[in-house]
Length: 106
Figure (tube, rainbow, N blue to C red):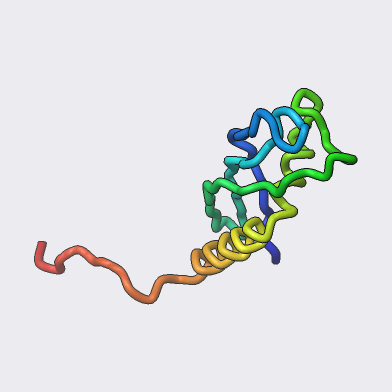
């Protein structure tokens, strides 16, 4: 079964003026979470966002959470973090092969 993942936007950093555009999102703080068969993981990261195409620029006041999630998902870093998250979840699904035990004479 594949992990179910969620991207939660935590904060936005803007550049007040960039190439004639105002309040351009340049970085997004987000949490990538995933769950599969009871194993879960969370990764908090900041994603650098590429400069927008002026013809399709969405003003800051009109941005939706979905718009910003799409900005993040368009980065190579998101793909890398998604792979990292699923690896962590897969590791958690397997029984550990080493661990600590209490002293047998205690």
